Image (tube, rainbow, N blue to C red; front, side):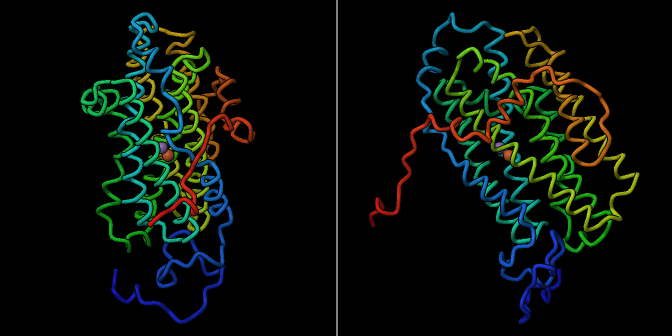
Length: 349
Ligand code: MN
Ligand code: FE
């Protein structure tokens, strides 16, 4: 990027001048107002309204249950560890991509405002898994190295990161080319649609099944907050992708659509392999077939939101999951916690 393009102009910015990407000289101080992309600002407000901290949630019952040798079967302990082990590093993977790749490329201020909020939420999710691992006295070495040591997790992480390095190597000027924009869109699909929209859901549905039996309730409550955040992340990401495509319609070629389609389907295959690794035997009325069906159902919904065709035709075997996701709209659901943030009046310096 030439130095020239960092210089500010003395002309006022109108909302019409704004674009999601490639704002060039108009970015300067990254002026938020006038807002053009109201949806991005609304996602930011929704994220703030959902604020939570892991340490607000009591882990006492989880600690008692986990210590009780009779409270879980070996298969149940195995799946809980596999899910926590995947999430323990998946959240930092997402945070890295956001800050190093997405934030760099998306120079629209409304979107960046949301990305800053999302980045903080990813830090909170990292904190949540650190807190759960510590509370249950799980083996930290095992949990935080699981992505290296369990092939099905390694493969998911590799897939998620497969297109990130090309973004990091890219010059910002490359975003003005079709190839560069396609590379960036593919990275956003890998992050928002695949990692947050498919790879997280085998874990979500398994953990929430324990919750339906009142087991590890603190861990499950943390996962519910994370699920609520993640569904906003994914919806923001899909809006972002579709908005970039609308502003640059020539990148959305049949060939590129087929590439995205294949990318999502290969993620479904990896998620199925991960589920087999987590649940070699069924538990809690869950088995691999049902979760595979669910993952295919989700993949179809994601494909449709990207304006591609549904492929699997699977039914949702867990309608209660949709109820939990939809509950985010109901105010009372998350009012069980006691919140005491340090307010301005309590500050001393
Ligand atoms: Mn997250
Ligand atoms: Fe996220």
